[in-house]
Image (cartoon, rainbow over the protein chains, first blue to last red):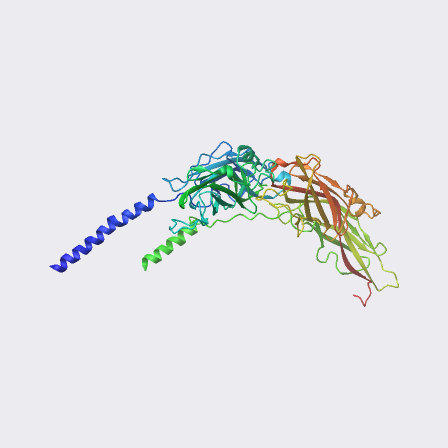
Length: 313
Length: 306
């Protein structure tokens, strides 16, 4: 009898833990999900067989590009566009030189942890090859997305207004560097925040890096227009710049103290850049407070597709 | 076990019926490949390698167009040592032969015959070794297409490009005895700052077994007229980038071991075009002469020789 009761209780305990305990843990995990992760923004992919790898010169040209937003910022602004280039415009005709608007594709959010997807299509006509004495025209198509993006990096930092004061009281935290690995849901990431306390002020060295594999350039519509492969292109003083939109410590902007900035932009060298900001501090006790860095930038992502156009004699 | 065998049989049946197919692309023959134009061969025993004096015989020549250009009004001439052999009729004939195409990947061929007669050998000669030559002269052209990268980004600000500007070399010819062996592109600054000027260094070679000449001298070359050095190895070259003609220098091109021609797109290309792959079509026009020789021996009719 006692054995039966013990076994019943054990089974009940296992059942209860399986139904409630783990379930509660799962809920906790969901609620604390950080969606600002990853090092990608918009990713492009040619849809399978659109275009196929081999086309005859009598067939229509159709290209379909799948657009996926893997970051945490919504794209589809007025100047966000996708361009198709790499081909001779006298052989593949009718493809819009001014590109196609990127549809509104939502990024990851607190509630939707996977970004949105959409497609962009290009249609054209292939000119006959035989009058040009060409048997085949192998070409590498280049789909280029130019879009504006934003990265928001948040990290708790330790502020010690009086780091050298002799005291017997234990400090709640010690100012140290804060590493932010894995990205913040954008192709440009804040990788590290160095904290250097001194009496009455704390300095921050914010490290920014292009981690998305594409090209970053100054934010703004006119720069986005120049990102097109059908323009003269972005100039030397436009590529590798990220706008520092804001830096806040405990909800207070310290952006006016940040330097060096070129028209509010941080210059990246070999994909990396730094900016120094400082916070005037008061009081005696050290404390931990959230710091957030907001970066705005234009970004260019490209994808290739090899295609062979064959002449029909 | 029975079920497995049944399934296997069903799979074999479906695959044989075409329900299960493997993806295969049709192979299109490469027409513009090879280093030959017209190829001459003597037919077997036409003429025989040994023949007697004062006899009539035939020289048969097979001529095949192994290149990619159609030959129109080509000339085939037979050459003999007139002291010992005479042609019984015309010593030259005209021919038309289609070149290789997708539907005729081997090219067309024809057989031309010439009646020939040996003269009586002199009393002091028992036998006489000589040669019969067959010479074909025809207008031909080389059509080469090089896919060139046109990159207006001279300063290298754009990192991701669909193609790279680089020299291209071609081996195996383009279905003609004169071949384009390499093309080296250069993107230069244009006088208009909004444009670039593409320039191409084209290398030509005579890769056939014969001789190139000015295209309007083919009949003179086959009938033994003196052409002079100014007509030999002279070719004409036209080049187009996409559909725009290029200006090529020098205008009068003389083939040497490796001849370089510079072609420029003088009007330039707008920098706003972006990098792309464009076909550079090169057409070289010329006359060409091919020759084959057959050694024969004329024998006197004597009791000993018979």
